[in-house]
Image: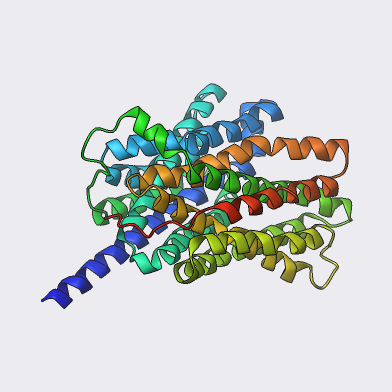
Length: 388
């Protein structure tokens, strides 16, 4: 009887993980449609390039920078609604971008879509954390992370159908939202009322340093991705080589995250965080100085993408184990707030490229991995807490 109950619980946990990972996949696929569609949106609404790029900033603000606040709201409400409504809000909002009457309404629509993404990420990560086996928590978190990475690779494909036919893709989000709501259990992280002071207290001690490590690592990676088109075009290559390089980097990121998560289950969180960042630095420098004409370029792109991103899901699980009573908020700090904060700073890399060269800017951004690695060496190993 006990064995049957254990098997049933394991199957239920796996179904929950699959549902929220599917939600992560489609949510991030929707999110990745925005940038490729900006030229079409500029033409449709007759606005400047600066105005249309504001859409990405608004989406980043509501989906990433505000994510800790949305994680707090999610802890006070039933997480089931956040996990289900997230992909629905993001999907409906971003697939209807070509159907609002004026540009101001488009900004509002994108902001609401971003809120859906911001609600989903901490809720989805919390479900995975609470239902994964403690000895495989890193692996499950990395599979959840890989779902989002895969979705980001698919988003530009969705965008290729154009604004007119885009609403058909909203149906996928509706189905995934319904599946998620049906599979996930109701639950609130805290039954008692939590004070603002206690929430502010989450972001202290090792979690602050873990966040700083993630910001520096993210800014180095974002800086490279932002400079890559300019570097390759400056060396005589075209959009095809840029697209292939980014695709290889994205696939490697997903696989590297899965490997990093599993290694952290076996050897500890902080050793993987340190090792992933430290081993990346010399290879990353060689990659920036290489070109697609070199036989090692694409294998090296894969290696660097896997190594630098192996620490992403491990960082999320580490934050959850630092703050086991607030897994949604801890997840949002590491996913949305760190990436969002780095995204706000990446323009500095572009400014440096204007003053020097894109290659120089990418190399300077790479040096941020050094203090990131130093911080990682000082982080204490978290205890594998019970999230249930």
